[in-house]
Image (cartoon, rainbow, N blue to C red; front, side, top):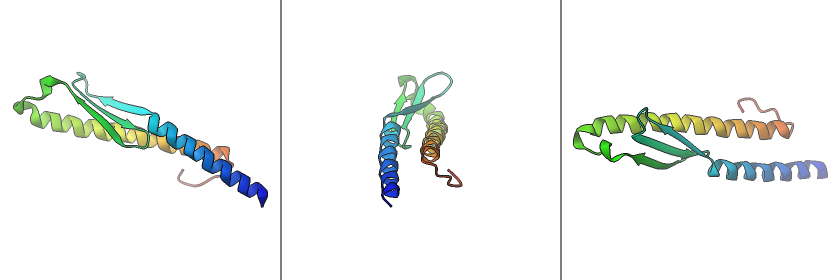
Length: 101
């Protein structure tokens, strides 16, 4: 019983460390000419959108919206994949085999 409690404590500790690491990790996606950048952390939460002034004209509004959506989805997918990989590694290190992780 004590071993199981120690294992649970260690798993909680490791999960918190991974969570902090993911929060501090930045994943960014840029469009091809670098005028739009979106940044997510590994949780995955959107943390920043950087837009070059050249994209701020009224006639570029639709292009800007498309770029933000495309890059946001790209960065979100990368961040979610990173989080899943990190948690899978934690579970593997703990000797747990949970399907889907």
